[in-house]
Each structure stands twice: as C-alpha cells, then as structure tokens.
Image 1 (cartoon, one colour):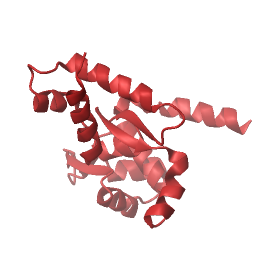
Image 2: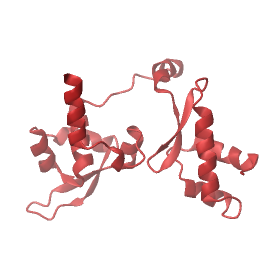
Image 3: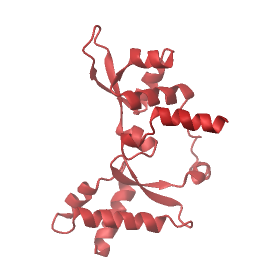
Image 4: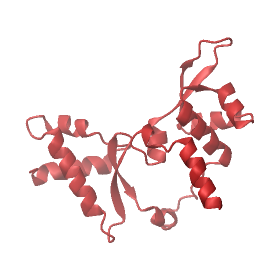
Length: 182
C-alpha cells in the first residue's frame, strides 16, 4: 500500500509534467527502496478508476508508454472560451492520410507516401514535421537516398495511443468504413 505522501507526489508529477509520465521515472524519483514499479502501477490504476466518475472533468490515461491527465473532450470548447484560446486546429484529410500511411508502413520515404496517396505530399509532410507528429528517421539506401519518416511520441499522445501497435490494421479500417456506408 502506497502512503499519502507518495500518492501526492505522483499526483503533482502528473499535473506538472509536459508529457506522459513514465512509471520507472516515478519510481526512480521516489527511490527504489520507497516504492516498487508494481505499487506505482497499482496506484495509477486506482487513480484512473477514481477519476472515471462522471463528476470529474479530468481523466488519467495511459498514453505513449506513460501516464497523463486529460480533460474530457466534451469540455474542450468551453475550456477554450474560459481560457480565451483560439479554436483548435484540426488536421486536414491529407494530413490524416499521410499520418496513416507513415504509421502503418514506417519507416517510409516521401516518394512511397506520394505513390500510396496518388498525390504530392511534400507540403503536408513538412507541416506534420513542424507540428512534431512526424520525424526524420535516416535515409533509405537506394538511388537518391531519400529521407525516411516515422511517427513520433507526440503522434501517440495526439491520438491517445499507448503504442503504435494499437492502431487498427488498414484492412480493418476499410471493412469498418464499408459497414458504416451500407
């Protein structure tokens, strides 16, 4: 059983972190003799369960290999107005297509993305690099040595994924779209 001081630290670490908090990082900060990985994981699961009650406006989710607090999506617009923020910029259809191709085929080159999409994706890839959703992953050892691209940890965070393997297979996505269209 974890004591209140440890729970308070975990809560504060989650609240002040700019990205997902790793369990191992919490254990190391507290000291291996103070708490185990299993105890921290159990505490996080308990916190997640407690925050899932309908009266809470935040949730604790596991994403990108760590944990983070999120606000309920249905509160987004109200919170933006409250904080005086501009409307959230959504990803274009082209950006979603490029991200899907890269996520399922990574590492992948721009010519490969262009071939799959049937359209030039240079500007879209540049935008996704600027937004931190894609990253350079070296060069392919073929004629011209084109850059290779991969998704980033920010991609996982943006889409609420813990691991890239949680993405549905493209064939499954196509089947789901066909069922919805009928």
